[in-house]
Image (cartoon, rainbow, N blue to C red):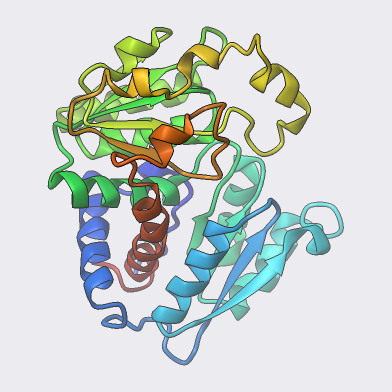
Length: 311
């Protein structure tokens, strides 16, 4: 079987993404029906950044597939400082069935994939968070029944990893993606161009706007993310202060009311109530964030199964 990695959302084709999501539904209903890691085989799960949901869901997914999650503290390993990424890959790969890595630059995970000799999974980089998008698409599928033709509106920092992955992952699913973000915080041009290419091929569309109402009016799914991504803590005062450029993009009850009457609300968490979202929204009846968090487990079981077993 050809070695495959999942480093960004469009490492899957549209057909493969749909297959992974179908498999996630199957594995949610029958959690132990696929055992590609029986042995147990080890999967190295490496964290250079803080984690809760990612660590819990990957550990659970690997265990359910019959494997052993070897969690590696990247701050102790000092990958790229004490030892090169390439040398680390040559250590982890032969002793693991796969490598899952939450790190900083996209170049780091690409170098890991070039040398590990086993599937490498992006558990979040500065540019993308593709495993989260699979969980979000699974959640939309469960609550809305279909993905193609649905409209998702994201408001907040359009230049962060979540906005980039929503653009690619949702365009791949044939959805209409709207990004509402202040001028100066728009998605990377290359990622935006790729998303438009995918959307055109799959019958979806992409819109980037600095008008929060235009971004969410009539949408089926309304999404936000923290305004202070990991690594941006020094900018917290400017990003969450009274004069924050993101303030008009906060998901208030008023903004939520602009979405379709049956729209659902997503947030990858952690959430900061009173900043990017009002408590009344995230804790309200239209919020499905806890389903979304659990679905990380099922989507990642399906993804690992696909990378290890194929279609």
